[in-house]
Image (cartoon, rainbow, N blue to C red; front, side):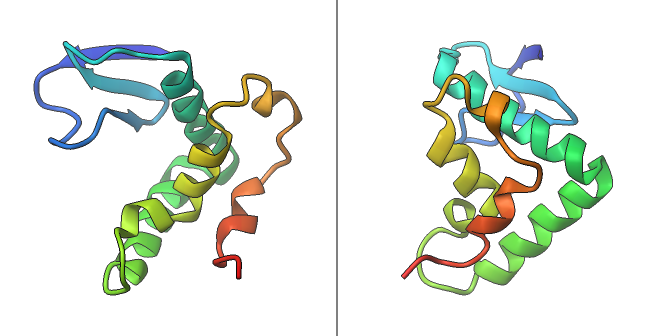
Length: 108
């Protein structure tokens, strides 16, 4: 994974941002194995969905969840998968394609 440290991306309040498989972070960001794994999960999602569809889906899902209670970012299915499995070092070895789809609906 290519890592670019800069002072502009990501926006304030976020640790890192994955754009087309390239990780952007601030100069003082501590890149933990957990954070790197989170972003690698996003790269896997991006590759299976295609770049354009990944970003369209991400934006549409965020917009749909924006008016609902809570922070929409954490309820995006792509983020839910990444957060729930970021601590599993071997997750990408056994991850099934389109695994993020099981996080589309809120579990009761």
